[in-house]
Length: 171
Image 1 (cartoon, one colour):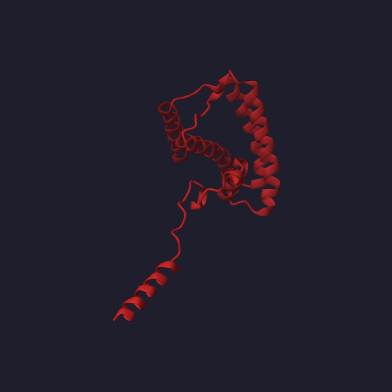
Image 2: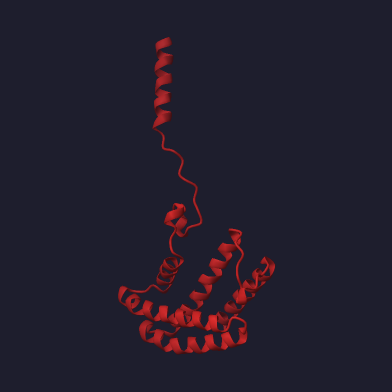
């Protein structure tokens, strides 16, 4: 009888040790992957490239032509923002002219007006997602002119922008 109990106890111990450890907790990375070690954090620009490439369903040939144009577009927008830090209306006017300028360039590459419109929406959506992620992590988002916005004001602006986008799509 003692031998039987000893064998059962050894069998239970062996089975318990053979089980796999529980999976690591899932982080906030896209695709449900655990967050990388602190020294291995992905570059936000690389995440943006992957996001836009996936959403636009870019072929390798399209991506090769698209990204240099998109990078030039973003550089011009950044320069316009720096030149008009305190003049929001002036920046918006300059940004609109930059979008119009690059609209034709994107149309040559993407061959469809709806895909070009999607480029501008994806840029805005990605920036909104980054802002929301910063808010979740407790970081202070910076608005135009480094004016610190409180969370309710920022949420209100994001909701208003999303409503505007949805009404434009329904028309």
